Length: 82
Image (cartoon, rainbow, N blue to C red; front, side, top):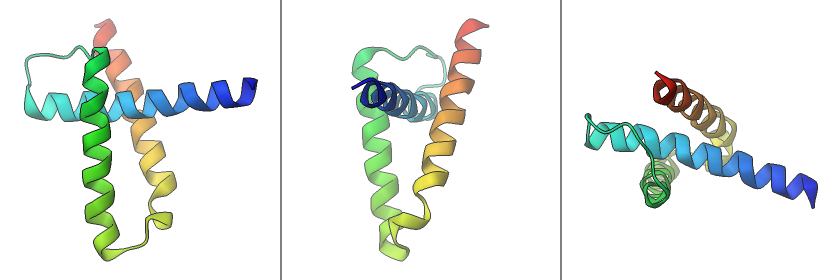
């Protein structure tokens, strides 16, 4: 149960990272991510996975997607503190 909780927190942080990037792409002046903005991250991940799946299997992009999502999350945390 502890491992699943840690995994869920990690997954939420990845989705929050993608929502931060997608929200900044749409609206440059607002840098905060609220609870409802996680839908931006889910929409971006669905769009990205659909486009990538047209050309390649998604198993090649799984770790890259997770890595970029976590990097975007850390970037969003750093930007929020400044």
